[in-house]
Image (cartoon, rainbow, N blue to C red; front, top):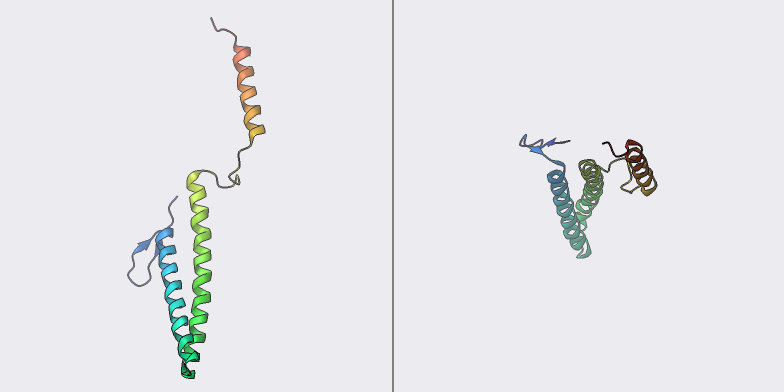
Length: 113
């Protein structure tokens, strides 16, 4: 299963991991803007308070996008690995029962000759 997203600016197709990396970059950029604006506010440049508030909003939005994409990527990885829906756990009781059924069939089939 392959899910791709379109990059709105260039029209390129992005896979979920590429989109996650792009989102994480955007998150880091917003964090850097927030740190710079916060430092200017500490130095007394109150005009930067508006920029700091916008950076906080951008950071929250980017964080939400990162978490959503991580969830999607993890889900896709599980689907590709074939463990989606099973919780990733082995059911030893079911495996033991299946082995027992197969052994019983072999016993019932006899020597075949």
